[in-house]
Image 1 (tube, helix red, strand yellow):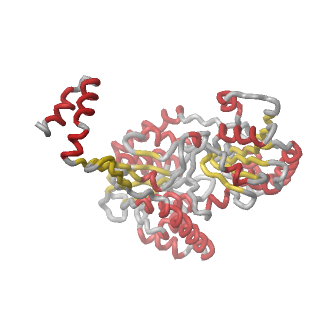
Image 2 (cartoon, rainbow, N blue to C red):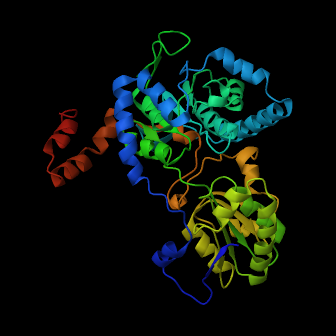
Image 3 (cartoon, helix red, strand yellow):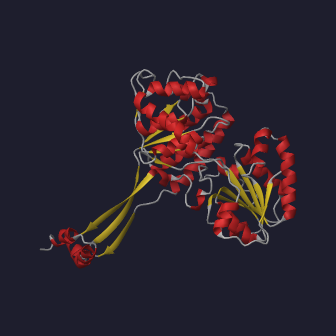
Length: 442
């Protein structure tokens, strides 16, 4: 079922490896042509434009662009008890980890009377995008909101596309998740128009339960979406901060002959059901395992609920089995690929995981599958895609924090470096810099 890339007996350069690893092709450049007029229109016409785009793209113009608080509490009250319990456990675990990973302030005494400190300051307000489309993602609500709350963000707005099946509101499970997390500012707006509203703000007078209301601009926008959402985030970057330009989901698995082919096949399939462009990649030095995984995939793919979507993803050019000479080469390939999710199914998996330098998240051993991280592991599932894990990180509290240096010198400490500052000021032909310091000692 999967394409095969045979790297055995080869010695490729880093650039050559980057060119041969399988990758989904999704260029959002052409989408920019579509989203830029939408962003300009929302800036100009506000709520009227938002409702019109809701009708055009989502099939409904919501009566209330901001979801009434009563509908949030109603959604939570009607939520399946088992789903609620699962959400509460996911929130507990994700919050436990994220609270613990907020970086503490630091202070360093550089010299007597000379201290430099570092403070982490949360942004004032964030906008969190939760997609609609092929699936419902309350887990994305949890991942985005908890990370922002752990960072200390005081103002959180959630946007999600209106659904014709739910009276123009986002899916009730999304609303229930927001209510469970204490978020009451939720908008039935999706697509590029939602990104524009968050970045620039919008007057919602006449289209909210309150009658007169404004969606205030945010400082940071996070959360995955389709290519038009991604293009819109690119368009407003600089006006606001963004987490990343998220592409289709992907999984890579490093496996050796000790791996269970059924586990490997099940995990490759679990990501393929997200999207026809999802990438599922097996990197192995065992051709016997590769054959067994392929056979298991054929059987499992035929029996799964989303068989058509899964087959398209698994047979696409973004999915493959990469055959290597040995485990060392498998690790090199994995680091070049830079997977969003990387599983390790090898002997001494923890040692192999320690050699990985490029991955959004690493899942160690046969009992740490990616769906664990999607929901209740405690880690965040908003991760870099498309190879950007080589230089980017997944969503975490620092995504919503600014680091600020605080410099505090007394007179003696400044006098001790007056000559150094003066010499550097002359070297850079900026004499007033040196004069600024000398003015204090004259």
